[in-house]
Figure (cartoon, rainbow, N blue to C red):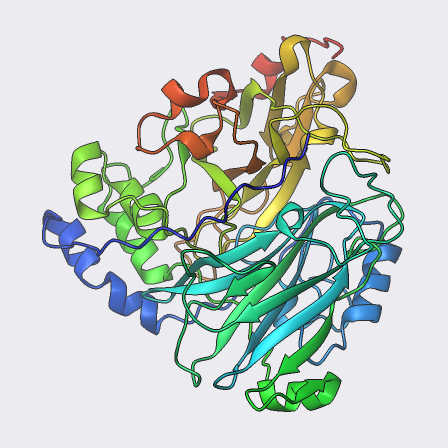
Length: 489
C-alpha cells in the first residue's frame, strides 16, 4: 500500500571528477571531456515511437488543450514528438518511457518571489515535481522534488495516492510552492526548493505524469496546475502577467553526450566494433553520466571508480524517485536478445482501479530499447502490466529487429517482443545501427523492499542486493530461440 514518506530526502552532493588517473588514449579523451560537453549542443534526432501508450486521439487532445500555456512548454513524450506542429522540446531525447507525459518549465524567479501551483491530484499511477540541477559539463540532474503521496491536500480534500483513500475521490485539491534557496533541514510542507540563490539564474523544473487511467488524458484528466507568482512586495500575478515577469523559454533539452567524445571512447576501446557492449550483456545500476557513460569503457572496476567516481548525482535529467538499470548490447553477438528476471509487484491501476491494489514493491516498472547517449532516444518500451508472467512472476522479454523476430516471440507464448530500433542513431558515418542501450526503471520503491536497486549503494553489488530482480540477458539466433516453442504464460 502507499505510505506517506516520513521525511523528505535532499539530493546527494556531487563529488568532484578526477582525470589525472586515466591511462593512455582514455586520458586524452577524458581530459577534454568537460570542455567538450559544455560546448556541445547536440541536435536530437526525432524519436520514432513504435508503441504508444495513449490512444492517438488522447495525445492530440492533450497537446491541443495544454500546448499553449505561457509557463509550461507543450507536453513532452513519445506520444507527442511526431504530432503535427510539434516543437523541438517535445522530442523526448533523454531516454523516455512510453507511459509518460512531461511538462517542462524554464524561467527566471525574481528576488524574494515564490510560485504557488494550485491543482488536482491526477487519475494516474504517478506524478511529481522536480527541479533541475546543473551538474557541470552541460549535464543536468535532479534537484529537490516532491511526489504525489508526499503532498498534503487542501482542507476538505483527500490525497488519493495515500491509503486508504479511494483513487476516485472527488475532492482532490492541493497546493505546491516553489521557493528560492537550498533545501533546509526541515523543509516546509508542500514546498520544492530551487537550490539556487542567484535571482538572475534561469531555473528549470518538470512535472512527470505516468500511466493515466483509461480514457484520461496525459495530465491524468485534471489539467495543469494554475500558477500564481508571489512577488516580494506581497503582490500576486497570474496568467500572462506572471509569465511576463518569469520570462519562460521553451528551449529543447541538450543534456545528452558529446558525439566526438563517444566516438573517441569507442575507437579507443579493446573491441571498437562492439564497445561498450559485452557478451553476455552486463546489467548495472546507473549512477551519473561520467561513471555510467564515459566510465563504461574502462574494464577494471577500481580504475573506473577512481577515474569517474560513482555518485547519486544522476544525469540526463533523471528522476530522483527512480533507479535505472542499463545494459549495452550489440547485434553482432546475436540477432536476438532476451531479458529475463523477476518482476517486482506493482499497483495494477489500469484500466481504472478504485483503490491502490494490495501490497507492492515499486510504483512502476518498465524496460525500453534506446539509442546511444549522444541522442538518448527511446524506441520501444514495455511497462509492468503489459508483461506476460510465468510462475513466481518470472518474465522473458525478446528484442530484435522486426525481420529477426522469432515466431514464438509473442504474448500467447509467454514472451513480450520489443523492437531493437535504429541503433546509436546520431548523424555521423560512425553511428552503428547494431548497438543499443537497454534501460529499465524501478520507480518509487517501497522503503521495506530489500531487493530494490535503490539499496545498491556500491557498484558491483547489484546481484547481491537485487537477487532474482536483477535482469539477465543473452544472445540468440532466431532459429535457436524458435526451438523453445510456445509456452503459455
